Each structure stands twice: as C-alpha cells, then as structure tokens.
Length: 546
Image (cartoon, rainbow, N blue to C red; front, side, top):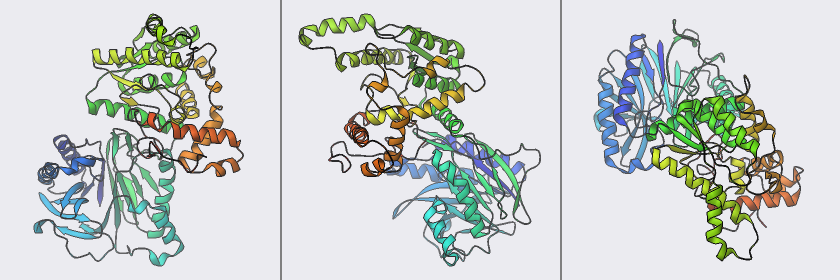
C-alpha cells in the first residue's frame, strides 16, 4: 500500500487557507498513487486555537471546509485532524474522507458515525479505531497518548497490559507536538521502544510551523517492525510518499529525495526552530520587516543573525543607540555585524536625550546619588526610540533578552524588555554563546570580539554582568535545575552549589515574576518556557524562598 504523509503549516482559524493547503496535498498524494494520505492533529483548524472554540461559527466553518475537502477524496482516503463540537464539549477527532464524502469520525477507541449526526457508535474490535484500505487494517490514534513514558514503561514491564494490535497492518499517530530540545531527544527512542513492544509498523505525522510562541518541528516519522526509522524534513513543510511493503518495511517512493534524518546538535536545532518561529510569527501577523537594538553584545547579535536568516538581511533594521557609557568597540562591533550581514542600520546616540531627562529631573533628584534609576533611563530611552521607529514604519520590534536575564530580572521594564516578540527568551546565556559559535562555523558573521568580551549592559562606567550576577556557567546550571528539573533549594545545594548564591538566585526568580508577566511572547525551545509553562503567582510566599 502506498501512503502519503503531509506535514503542513496550517494557520489558526484560517479555514480557507487551510482547506486549499490540504486539497493540494491530497492532489499531490493521489498523483503519486497513494491510497492513503495522513495529516496532523488539528490540521484543518490550525493548532493551539484555544478560546476560538468558544464560538459556534468556529465549528461551523470546520464542517463546511471538511465537506469541501471530502469532495476531493475520490480514489484516495484521507485522515484529517479536525475539531468537533459535541454535547460533552470540544473533541479533537480524525475525519475519514473517502468516495467524496465524510465517511466517519474517529475518536479515541470509538467510531462516531457521520450519518448519525456524530453520535457514538459501538467500540471496534481493536483497541484503536480501524480503517480498512486496500485490504490493510490501519489503526488510528489522535494525540500524544502513545508518547507517555509511564505508559510505555508499564507495557515494557508487563506486556499483558499492552493493547492487542496483532490484527493491524499499520498504526497511525496524528499529533501536534511542539518542539523542545528535550522532547526531540527522547521522542525517537520512545517510539522505537513502542514499535518493538507492539510489533506493528508506526507512522507519526506531526504539525510544522510556528504558532505564536509554540514551534512545531514536523520531522514526522515512519518506524518499521524491525526498528528502521525514516523521517520527513525538520522545520519545513513536506508531502512525502512511501510504500508499505511486505514485512512492514517502508520504502520512499521512487523519484523523491532521501528523507531527512532525525539528528542535529542542540545549537543547530535551536537555530532552525527560532528561524522558523520568527518567519512564521512575522508572516502570520502580517509584518514584513523587523527592527531591533544593536548593542554590540552577543544577545542582539545572535537575534540579528536569526532574523536576517528568517526574513532576509535587507528586511532587518539594526539600530545602534550608544549612551554616555557605551564603549567604542561596542559601536564598532554592532556596525561590523550589520555590514557582514548586509543589513541596513542607523546610528542614533541617546546622549542628548539622556542629558535632557537628567536636567528635567534634577530638581527632584537633588542630593540623590547616581544609581539604577539613571541606568534604567538610558534603557528606556532606547526603548522609546525603537518603538518610535516601529510605529512610524510598521516594523516588528524584536526583543533580544535571554532566558537567564529574564529569570533573574536583569532587564528594564519598558526599556530593553520592549518588543512584539522575544526571540531568545527561552534560551539560556550559555546557549546564546553556543549559537553564536555555531553561526560563525564557516565564516566570521558575528565579530569574534562580541563573543569573547565580558557581557555588559554598559549603563555605568566599567559595568559587567558579573558585577550583579554569578558567572553564567554557574547561573545557568542553577536555573536549569530549578526551572526545568524542579529541584528545590536543598536539592540544588546538595549538588555542590554555594547555598547563599542559590538562595539569592531563587529569590531573584521569585521577585521578578511581575516583570516576566509584562514580557512579549517568547519563542519556546524548552519544556519550561516563561509564559507557556512557567505559571507562578505574582504574589505568593514561595516554599523555596526562606
């Protein structure tokens, strides 16, 4: 049997666009001789539709679009992920389209007969809904039920608890799994283990594309009974056709390129995910050009390179905003970066604006020494200039703060925290350095001085980040244990870290929830991103802060 896999970048709520995208994929699959074409979960509505499901028209549009798609399914069967409104509420189901109509809906382990208006039918013989195509029995699972490590662990320990899939020729898993480095690293081995236990070939088809902060990698997978794995492209749309041959071995359709392998070092994966995230966020919000502040530091440099890759260097404006404490080499490094990329840039010193502010405030600040107030005025003036350019020319302002800074509040509200999208807000500072080195692997794009010099906000004479924070190698490790691995104070100290330093870091994290609550959307590359997963109360007595 010939099977087509369509990992598509559908748009949330844009049924006309999604309908056309799906129909084109069906036509391509049918032209290649496929009997079955598979789509991801929620492909018709777009993933992460959230409260759009509160409105009845959302479901009415889905039904209308599904009927249009079904009319194209003659001589081919399509499995399409779609939202369905039932008496019990929202269900994510799989529509079976064949012979020009919606033949059935599949939900969990039950059939829902299309002809009966969506009422539940009798459970099938197999533990999963089954579709028969060219004499092959295809089991269908929608969602991430097959990817629960605890469940696979139970089956591995006691095979008697496993579902009976002996009658199946193929198991299909339609998902919408957002990218994270950890998810990427464990998913392949988990599915391999699953196939070895169930002894049935598996196809997992995943969504691809950026949906605000969520980044879907594609990288759909085919796993044969003997453990062989083939993958579709990562972070790109692809419609690929495979033959399911005797012995449950998948073979790529002749005439197509070899499938991508599911591999890649962490910096490369994060790089590709963020490039896709920037490109899709801009495209789906209607922006064509971006602007960002270029400080000569590593965060703005890495953000600039990512944006240039995503949008084209000519569509990214860098703005150099030196203040009285900016070093000459920072300006030189920022200018060199823009010239290396071929991006436009402006040099707009904020010295005069800064002096005007100090003069206006001097009667009220009389007798008060220079402190963080004057530092923050510089950052906020830069924010004002950047937002003015954004407003005047219709550019998206990209925020350049990293996760380490966001965690401990090392940033200025309404200053360097401005922006419509946070590119590095889920990337630790040490990972930013790794990204910079990855970007320079073939030639010097980011000036090496930017990478090797000590990080500094340059808001006071001789300032370095290490004056206020632990070294980033240490800080990031503590944050990793606290944020990602959910270790408490005593557990982190037991790993060999100095107690007072850990206590201070955890206190800073708790104190700065209010800042992060006002940050722009953050592109997610971990399983504990601020805004997406990390949801702490703004006002609370934290059990780990004493």
